[in-house]
Image (cartoon, rainbow, N blue to C red; front, side, top):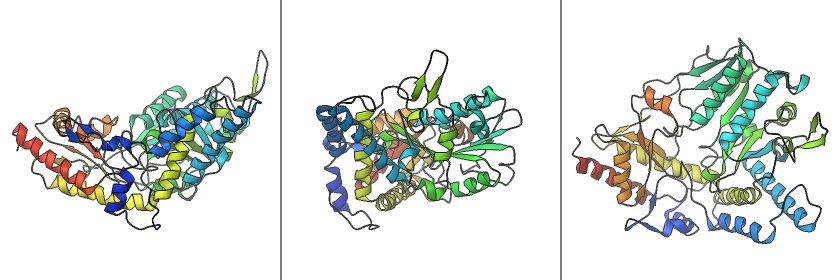
Length: 429
């Protein structure tokens, strides 16, 4: 990877050099060079990430926080060094990062901590997590199902009310001062929509929530890989990350939680490795983050994720954000210019990442995706785990193209040509 000056836009030569770090980008699909525009679902991994996991498995593989032998100590050090790397990447302290299997588990961890507190677990320290009739949880109509269904379940378990911030006809959040009130206990919102690609004005929601004493959980799955993220500067209480969307492996995610909140939260999963003392009738738990890390952990995956965030840091998150903003606008402008294409969220006047979803009336998204795949262009089709958003915009599914630091303007242009060819092939105008 070629060093570069901070803040300078990624140049074509640099992107081509970066692409050499990703072996899969050198392959062909259906006789065409792979054009990978599905990074919003799963990003590709550079050699340093692949090598980090393999090196751990071949030189350090051992149980962490358990053994007294040298290999176990070295594995534990690598595991905790990985935690520190991810913490630095998002502006947190080491003990504010909890390892999870994915962001979905991280959100459920918080939801079940609220649920457990609401039935009396956690003692007086957990009082602020207790919910009941009259309390409200606020989320939005654009959320990924992972940041909606856990709150539906929490409301059902506790008697609290789930309130949803609606969307306007373009897909933007319709914010007003009556949505977050003295009854609000938690606001859960996505930083970047995984369907629309827009960067939501979360600062406004965070300020409103904290103004009434409510907590905020930020779904950062589509922002942490693409934008500089500082959880302390944003002043969020919780944030969730997904490793496989940010150059890391599958099976690893993270929860950021403010230290004082993690210390007060009752655990979600229980068992080995998260306790201090156990008797037949009761147990005492470790302090966070280990309190929330029951059982054998995803050690090699954590080490690989640390390699991924170091790689992103070396490229420069401001540079990646600028590159993707340009690609995102190129996607939206190019799709909008094609007769017969409707770009979801095209009219929203907000900054965006390199992602765009669209509908071609008369062509099912799966058919469009298959046609593009025949040309070696990988995109996402379906409802993208956001059925309420699609329903609000009057469609059942869409086709989504999403870029990353290794994507090029030429790939975007080839994709746009493919969309035009799709319309011509199916005879829809």
